[in-house]
Length: 464
Image (cartoon, rainbow, N blue to C red):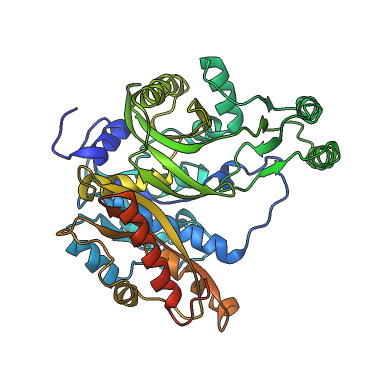
């Protein structure tokens, strides 16, 4: 690989465009799975409006993927004090573009598509000979393809049809079976008959617990426990009614045994246009109730366990390339209580939470340091500015001289709920502060974590 840009950003540009110095425009369209899932049969779920607003403002993570020659579209301009904090750390930020109006319930892509003036301005990034900026995203759906086309910019990635196909949990299960990679007992189901047979086999296995997952479920949504034959029958009946109403008998569900585990893992590799695979990292994934809570880096693996992860990545990368995919791939995996590896829980052929930590990790997590990415839930009745956050966490934010502290990598999610002023005025709003804790030991990371949580909770209106 040639070029002057170091690290992950250069590898990403090379994988997507063939050159390490191609300018990129980033879109942080989190939970793109909702677009891929349109028209698919689903399980019952609930989603609060404020939660959607917070998720959509996770787009601010995309600040950390590029450098000064790149661009990013964000729903809202970041807090100026936050930008000053990042500049003070020496973070080389991409140029920021913001739509004229944002809707908390829309992704950043949808906001941008609703702003013709922004799209016209972005079209100038194509350059005089069309060799300029290219569009990349958290994940590519029809919306991102339409954004690129309308802005007159090349789409640096495969089309939405390919991206949807390789992100299905049905695809993950079948590819892992094909490659002989260890998985829990389970079935990939694409018809009602296959789903009924899987439910019958699962409920007959009274010594084990099984779950059913939607093909495009994310963040703990789209999953149900088959706790009894009666529960399985209710779910099957609901799916059958959906199929009858829609006239679409095609399904996309996975039924799997819920196996004992010791550690959740997330590893990432990048597939190039030439089919080559670069292994990026493996991290311990911190989850609670099936919902992502953060990562510990580096992962505490034996050499044999790490070798097995790298081998799985190489095999999966070749398979994905053969199906026309190139770009970032994150894979959830886990270790059983005896240390054995399940190398594929699911394939996420898109950016992952851990993707947005790589630039910070490369720059600020030195040799022998421990880093833990996590978020702090907040319940606020008034907005929390970054200036106040900085005061509250005085002495705990990252200090390059110490090489330790909290690297805040998303502040927009703190106040996202306040965007819905008509509904939230005078009410408590949920928010999240995201960051990466860096210190010399797990004990020190734990102490930092405890102190940060205590100080945030001490804010007079925070009832978290």
